[in-house]
Image (cartoon, rainbow, N blue to C red; front, top):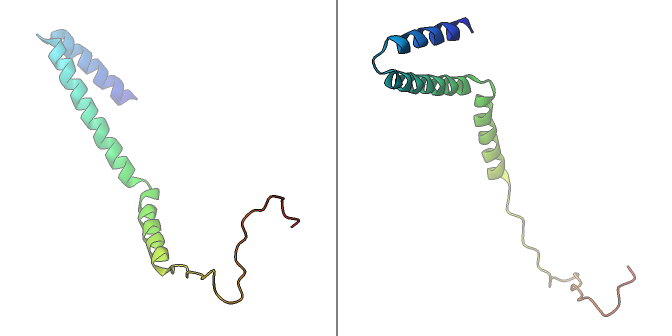
Length: 93
C-alpha cells in the first residue's frame, strides 16, 4: 500500500511539473494497465489448481478412450416382445 501511495505522490508531482500533464497521465495509465495485465497473467500461472486441470483433462481423455460403444440391441431378436403402441385406454400396469 505504501508503494502505491509513493507512486501516486510521484505521479502527482510529475503532472504539476509537466508541460502537458494529459499525455503524462495517459502514458502512466497505459503503463499501469500493462503492469496489471502482466501481474494477473503471472498469478494465474502460479495458482496451484492450474496443473491439476491438465492432469484432469488427460485422465478424462484416457477414460473416454477406454469406453466402448454400446452394442446395438436388435428389437426383433428371438425372445423380445415388440413395443406396443398406446391404446385408447391407459394400461393397467
